[in-house]
Image (cartoon, rainbow over all chains, first blue to last red; front, side):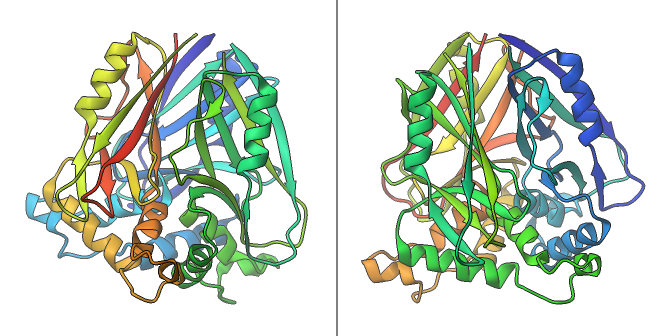
Length: 137
Length: 137
Length: 137
């Protein structure tokens, strides 16, 4: 059994942004040399998400609008009594999920025809990290 | 370490439908011969979910009603400018989750007493695929 | 490859409660002796969650308020025709997620600086179980 671990760094220009990361994940899996296994992609900051969906800019706007509707910015979160202002971003991470597991088959990401991997930034403009860990043979 | 990969196909009669798949997953884990490990069950189409909850038809109706309330059908999604009409199904996949990992202990699915595995179809009446991948010893 | 399996038990005093479990998970990973791998933490009861977020009591109140807003208690759930009264708790499990996978690197939980692991109880005051399963080398 082999294990391979690396980290991706992000610093988005906007507070909320969806970043396509399939190419970086694919590159790391290729470098791992693992043919059969699982690749965990997990956001290490608690105001970010990882999710697998469509690479289509209109849908990305729909996702941003929807997250804002269901887990809106609001000055009155209890969390803000600590001096923070990002309560909504913590909830958006829960709503959208913070990690996914990608199956690796014959050395490739075993994704469906339209599945792509995304980093969701809900409180950006600062450096944040994502772990990519591959386990297998 | 052993790896076992197979795929389940679904073509639901209704647009939205919840399908109980624990028996199929259990059968594949049994065929894998793996005694200790993890079984990933992941929807490969971006308008479907996999989730673990109760096998109770009333609850399934509640889940369908709730998904429709929180991530409703709406002609005005930006995604629809591409000619699609399933923006809500992409959001329902995010809300309900698209994969789960089932622990395998002594060759069995190590689920709680009421846990069952479900395929959630949010844009059906066409052929769609789910990967089942088992890793372990 | 090694596998290690154990279970945590919870019986909360309140119906809804968020319990910090990083120390227990860390202890089990340490006892597993596994240096490189994945640790699955998964709620085995279908009205509970596992999630990774901030250890901050104000935020926890925000999470409880938000779950109640998005997946509210309601006497009219179809599920209640079976005699149950916890339909909301099943939906809260879906909304908040029921499991997470923690990467293990050099024998430690490879979490971000603020990431902590939580058990979310949405229908408590009775004994419930969480599986912790570690796979790796």
